[in-house]
Amino acid sequence: MFPKAVDQHKPQKPLIPNGLGVFFVLISVVNLFLFHYFDYERALPLAGCILFGGFMGLLDDWIDLRWRYKAFLPIIAAIPLSALASDFALRTSISVIFTDIDFGIYYYFLIIPLIVTVTTNTVNQLGGLNGLETICPSIIMAGLMIASTSHAPLLYVPLVVTLSLAYFNFQGKIFVGNTGSFAFGITLASFAIIADIKFVLLFSIAPYIFNSAFKLLNFFIFKTKPELILEGSKLQANHRRSLITLIGYKRPLTERQIVSIISLLFVLSTVTSVLVWILL
Image 1: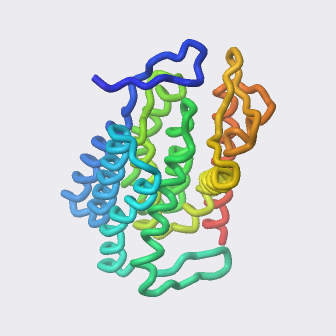
Image 2: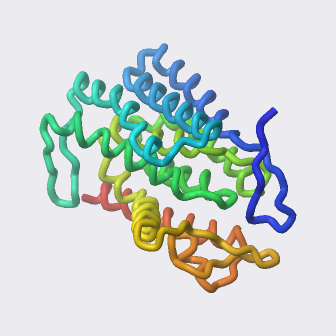
């Protein structure tokens, strides 16, 4: 039923069903439409963003979009969020430790599109290992729910679906594809804006931002992409071009060990951001 992709980090290079992230999109959107039916006013913009993120990822899975197009497409998904922020008079400021930075009218036309674009693209850029594309968003999703208990019901079903996909993805039985990674990223950004917890989001995705900045810097300097070398059942890198290759640089590790280390980084960033948000 689903197209298959080669698992490059397994000795036998098995073919794995790809694009299972579509289940996250479909189930989450149906659930949010039900919320909207029962007059939960902020469910519909989140549903629209998830639909757009899934569609954008599906396009990338089908026709392999150039990165320059993928980088700016999420801006379109920010339109319903900007309308929501305006209609419901959401704060136009971002809390940073002891102060609030108010962006005024620029919040709608600059800050919201920037948050959506950065989050969606950075989430999509950290992948390639089984479990990485599902476990890390699950951790952040859980943290956002803790930081905003009043809006947490919007993410109950999406989190359950993400964890279900993570169970099979971590075992190397499925890939969520760009359909999943784009939808996960846009879900995190949209919920943080709707629940007005941008601070928690920005600090939680710190490993994503570091990975993307590191990859882009190295690409522009060395013109090479990060790559892992498979030796038996272990992976290692002979260069440092991304968060993954930085961890595996001249250090043979199993795929699960690398995924576990990166997941712990996200636990650390998310727990820290949630604690700072609650305590301050």
